Image (tube, rainbow, N blue to C red; front, side, top):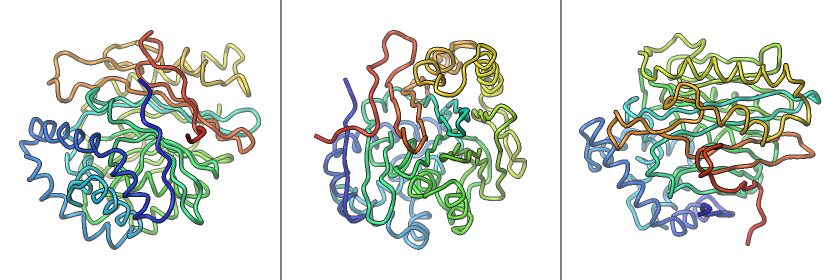
Length: 362
């Protein structure tokens, strides 16, 4: 079954209310799922999680008042407390690295200097029914097209200015609640008009609350943003115009990062090898299509279950088993701007049909 497609427009409050009202059941189910995960990984009940989220609340109000107003609207539309929505949007920070979501991201410069930005997003299959394709139209800002979890204001996608974002979770300390949570940082990137504008916005606001990687690109520039509360490193494209990233920092040494996903370095090496196999086969320019990336890179099961196309590891607790829930490939050429999304594990034979962003609103 295809995910919900939701078109939101208007003021921050109006956008939030429609989000909350339209995805009310999914947001409540997300809370139930994360309550179980927090209980398993951190011994925190949902009331405990809401209490922790109070640490973030005043800084969200101060740093990103328009996004906080949208969160208030989501809470109102879903008939929930604002702390429920703050907690969902700060779940990566509150978990303190206890959630083990993987992901493999790749940006590739085409011969005409445009970029293709792509990723598999790996997470617990229980949230798959609560994913939504959302477009957001705001006065004076680019229109956003993204795939996100119900109740969360920013995630993976692109905007009408040709800026795209992918996400890799990183498990590292410290976490500083006075800074911008990663899902809010993703939203800020998706409100930006260029990579440079996005980086300047995050730096102006004082950086992010937890260690994470955002792979960001526009029509002329791509950067791997290895972000942390205590310092950032920015990774440029290699000689082939490629940036690959998984779930460990490549250059950022400002944080305390214990090894936690043994498959992450293997996936990073593998995505580079597969991309260079395509280059050796003469794949470049317009031949770098979503279908060839899905078939030749994102369907790869080498080192399964911790593969680029991730499958559940039965040795892990059911609440934290990850698998690939969707693949997205974004073409950031200004004259051919758009993305293809498939839900499920690419190449498995069980994945859904190809969906496109933007889509025609019904």
